[in-house]
Length: 491
Image (cartoon, rainbow, N blue to C red; front, top):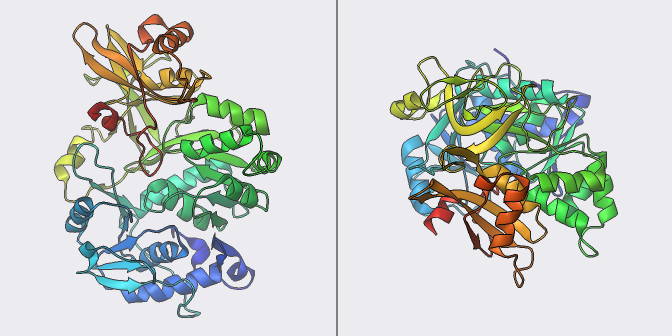
């Protein structure tokens, strides 16, 4: 059995005094985190399953580490989840207790559960830090999907999958105990919790969580010893805007220097527009690298630290991960021109959906490949480009397969466009027509729809031009900054 967090097993001497996590003014060393999580683990050892009120705080870190130490599956809860969705998650996962901070106000749906208070400032001090031996296939976390096609499903993530993904990223990124990770990601998703918390703790490094994202916070923490930055495209877009800004806010030179000094700038959870890639690279001399993963698969691909950064791609498959493209009829596709659904298999995969053997079976092929529902291409060097979701980002128009992402990147390169999303809408002649949803750089003087359509056709191909352009004040986004395209269709 490989321990998930070996650095937290009986830390003594210099290891105990090393900073593990920092949230604002509150910092916990490895010794303090080990003591706090050990004491909490003893309190929840008899729980079959626990919910974690996953605020961006040190209490959430202690709660999740304690659950791992106790061998008790944890269900991270988004504090912003609506009543109906929260009720569904609780009924489905059946936790016996909820772990929450002393000042957290919990909704009525959680009142029937035993509340176990987690306080990062007051915990039992103990020298007993026993190692937890657990089956690699034992559930570690149950993370609920966004539920875009029905009620959220609980993806059961075994200890084996978490260890495999984090070790593959260690290989790809040269991640060590000397790295100091900076981010402001929510702690109820894979990105922020597994990569952003368990990642540094597995390596013996440290995490500085900003609480709320800001360019000032990024500049401060990267400029004072941070070596890695994790973010989503919305965050990097705001950094690019700050680097372009004339006066006000964070000092541009300070931010550029801090970003240039980081060892790795990593974006994930959605595609980072090429326009933002180029703006950050021009101001800092550093390239943002991307990776590709899902709740059910954890990490699949990633640009290596020693590899060639290619804006618009998410790199080759990580160590241990197999990846293939498949046509709708099941034909396996090859060649750099092929575009198809991405399927993966490897030790990074989840165990299945909680209480949903039907959904688990439907998500896999007979020979064990997971159907991601994402569409992509693979070039001659094995680099993967994500076209988008099969259901929303692959547009079939006039006999052509068109990826929404490439059109969005071209639109974002137009000076009159601040944000853009592309969808396919039913068309009696073409099957589907390309529709653009645009937030203008200057709302009082937006570009003409014909101008944007011609801009796309001139850089790509005539059949990829938007047939309809809608102007919006803002694009609908979820907690991770992903554009909710189904809302655009509904609107």
